[in-house]
Length: 151
Ligand code: 4NP
Picture (cartoon, helix red, strand yellow):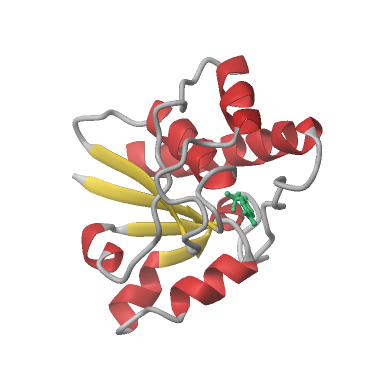
Protein backbone atom coordinates (compact mmCIF):
# COMPACT_ATOMS: atom_id res chain seq x y z
CA UNK A 1 0.00 0.00 0.00
CA UNK A 2 1.47 3.33 -1.08
CA UNK A 3 0.30 6.25 1.05
CA UNK A 4 0.08 9.79 -0.29
CA UNK A 5 -0.62 12.95 1.70
CA UNK A 6 -1.65 16.28 0.15
CA UNK A 7 -0.83 19.35 2.25
CA UNK A 8 -1.90 23.01 2.10
CA UNK A 9 -2.43 25.72 4.72
CA UNK A 10 -6.04 25.33 5.80
CA UNK A 11 -6.95 21.88 4.42
CA UNK A 12 -10.22 23.27 3.09
CA UNK A 13 -9.40 24.57 -0.42
CA UNK A 14 -6.43 23.07 -2.27
CA UNK A 15 -5.46 19.86 -0.49
CA UNK A 16 -8.98 18.36 -0.23
CA UNK A 17 -9.29 18.92 -3.99
CA UNK A 18 -5.89 17.29 -4.52
CA UNK A 19 -6.99 14.39 -2.31
CA UNK A 20 -10.20 13.83 -4.28
CA UNK A 21 -8.49 14.12 -7.64
CA UNK A 22 -5.58 11.85 -6.69
CA UNK A 23 -7.87 9.21 -5.21
CA UNK A 24 -9.96 9.15 -8.39
CA UNK A 25 -6.89 8.20 -10.44
CA UNK A 26 -5.57 5.36 -8.25
CA UNK A 27 -6.87 1.92 -7.29
CA UNK A 28 -8.11 2.00 -3.71
CA UNK A 29 -6.71 -1.48 -2.98
CA UNK A 30 -3.15 -0.32 -3.57
CA UNK A 31 -3.15 3.33 -2.58
CA UNK A 32 -4.25 5.41 0.40
CA UNK A 33 -4.72 9.16 -0.15
CA UNK A 34 -5.31 11.76 2.57
CA UNK A 35 -4.86 15.51 3.09
CA UNK A 36 -3.94 17.87 5.92
CA UNK A 37 -3.25 21.54 6.61
CA UNK A 38 -0.20 23.06 8.26
CA UNK A 39 -2.52 25.38 10.24
CA UNK A 40 -5.23 24.41 12.69
CA UNK A 41 -7.80 27.05 11.68
CA UNK A 42 -10.19 24.64 10.01
CA UNK A 43 -9.77 21.39 11.93
CA UNK A 44 -13.00 19.37 11.65
CA UNK A 45 -14.43 21.65 8.94
CA UNK A 46 -15.80 20.57 5.57
CA UNK A 47 -13.98 21.74 2.45
CA UNK A 48 -14.70 25.27 1.22
CA UNK A 49 -17.95 25.29 -0.79
CA UNK A 50 -16.10 26.52 -3.86
CA UNK A 51 -13.82 23.45 -3.76
CA UNK A 52 -16.84 21.18 -3.29
CA UNK A 53 -18.56 22.81 -6.30
CA UNK A 54 -15.60 22.64 -8.68
CA UNK A 55 -14.96 19.00 -7.69
CA UNK A 56 -18.62 18.19 -8.34
CA UNK A 57 -18.40 19.84 -11.75
CA UNK A 58 -15.73 17.27 -12.65
CA UNK A 59 -17.61 14.33 -11.11
CA UNK A 60 -15.88 14.15 -7.73
CA UNK A 61 -17.54 14.26 -4.31
CA UNK A 62 -15.28 15.75 -1.64
CA UNK A 63 -18.11 17.05 0.57
CA UNK A 64 -17.55 14.41 3.29
CA UNK A 65 -13.89 15.34 3.92
CA UNK A 66 -12.93 17.01 7.21
CA UNK A 67 -9.98 19.31 7.87
CA UNK A 68 -7.12 18.13 10.04
CA UNK A 69 -3.72 19.53 10.95
CA UNK A 70 -0.49 18.03 9.65
CA UNK A 71 1.61 16.50 12.44
CA UNK A 72 5.00 14.85 12.76
CA UNK A 73 3.53 11.31 12.83
CA UNK A 74 2.44 11.84 9.23
CA UNK A 75 6.07 11.25 8.27
CA UNK A 76 5.70 7.68 9.60
CA UNK A 77 2.30 7.15 7.98
CA UNK A 78 2.96 8.44 4.47
CA UNK A 79 5.37 7.60 1.65
CA UNK A 80 4.94 10.84 -0.31
CA UNK A 81 3.94 14.23 1.06
CA UNK A 82 2.95 16.74 -1.64
CA UNK A 83 2.81 20.41 -0.64
CA UNK A 84 1.00 23.14 -2.57
CA UNK A 85 3.35 26.09 -1.99
CA UNK A 86 6.60 27.33 -0.55
CA UNK A 87 5.08 28.29 2.78
CA UNK A 88 3.64 24.78 3.21
CA UNK A 89 7.04 23.38 2.23
CA UNK A 90 8.83 25.41 4.89
CA UNK A 91 6.30 24.51 7.57
CA UNK A 92 6.44 20.79 6.80
CA UNK A 93 10.24 20.73 6.46
CA UNK A 94 10.49 22.43 9.86
CA UNK A 95 8.90 19.33 11.42
CA UNK A 96 11.18 16.76 9.73
CA UNK A 97 13.33 14.63 12.02
CA UNK A 98 15.77 13.06 9.57
CA UNK A 99 16.75 12.73 5.90
CA UNK A 100 14.13 10.06 5.29
CA UNK A 101 11.40 12.51 6.32
CA UNK A 102 12.89 15.24 4.11
CA UNK A 103 12.96 13.05 0.97
CA UNK A 104 9.19 12.48 1.29
CA UNK A 105 8.31 16.19 0.93
CA UNK A 106 7.72 17.44 -2.60
CA UNK A 107 6.14 20.41 -4.38
CA UNK A 108 3.16 18.93 -6.21
CA UNK A 109 3.73 21.13 -9.29
CA UNK A 110 7.24 19.71 -9.68
CA UNK A 111 5.38 16.72 -11.15
CA UNK A 112 4.50 19.00 -14.08
CA UNK A 113 7.41 21.49 -14.00
CA UNK A 114 10.37 19.55 -12.59
CA UNK A 115 12.59 21.35 -10.07
CA UNK A 116 10.79 24.70 -10.48
CA UNK A 117 9.17 24.70 -7.03
CA UNK A 118 6.11 26.54 -8.39
CA UNK A 119 3.15 27.14 -6.07
CA UNK A 120 -0.49 26.21 -6.48
CA UNK A 121 -1.95 29.67 -5.73
CA UNK A 122 -4.06 29.96 -2.60
CA UNK A 123 -7.61 30.58 -3.92
CA UNK A 124 -9.18 31.32 -0.51
CA UNK A 125 -9.46 35.11 -0.88
CA UNK A 126 -10.21 35.11 -4.63
CA UNK A 127 -13.16 34.28 -6.82
CA UNK A 128 -14.53 31.05 -8.26
CA UNK A 129 -12.16 31.16 -11.24
CA UNK A 130 -9.27 30.65 -8.81
CA UNK A 131 -10.75 27.29 -7.85
CA UNK A 132 -11.17 26.25 -11.49
CA UNK A 133 -7.53 27.18 -12.10
CA UNK A 134 -6.40 25.22 -9.03
CA UNK A 135 -8.46 22.23 -10.16
CA UNK A 136 -6.76 22.18 -13.57
CA UNK A 137 -3.27 22.49 -12.10
CA UNK A 138 -3.91 19.70 -9.60
CA UNK A 139 -5.54 17.47 -12.21
CA UNK A 140 -2.45 17.68 -14.43
CA UNK A 141 -0.07 17.06 -11.52
CA UNK A 142 -2.13 14.11 -10.24
CA UNK A 143 -2.28 12.65 -13.75
CA UNK A 144 1.51 12.60 -13.85
CA UNK A 145 1.78 11.13 -10.35
CA UNK A 146 -0.74 8.43 -11.27
CA UNK A 147 1.13 7.59 -14.49
CA UNK A 148 4.35 7.10 -12.53
CA UNK A 149 2.72 5.05 -9.78
CA UNK A 150 0.69 2.91 -12.17
CA UNK A 151 3.61 2.13 -14.49
P1 4NP B 1 -6.06 26.19 1.63
O1 4NP B 1 -6.68 27.67 1.63
O2 4NP B 1 -4.71 26.31 2.33
O3 4NP B 1 -5.93 25.85 0.20
O4 4NP B 1 -7.05 25.32 2.39
C1 4NP B 1 -6.83 28.44 2.78
C2 4NP B 1 -7.89 28.21 3.61
C3 4NP B 1 -8.08 29.00 4.73
C4 4NP B 1 -7.19 30.02 5.00
C5 4NP B 1 -6.12 30.24 4.17
C6 4NP B 1 -5.94 29.45 3.06
N1 4NP B 1 -7.38 30.85 6.13
O5 4NP B 1 -6.61 31.79 6.33
O6 4NP B 1 -8.32 30.58 6.92
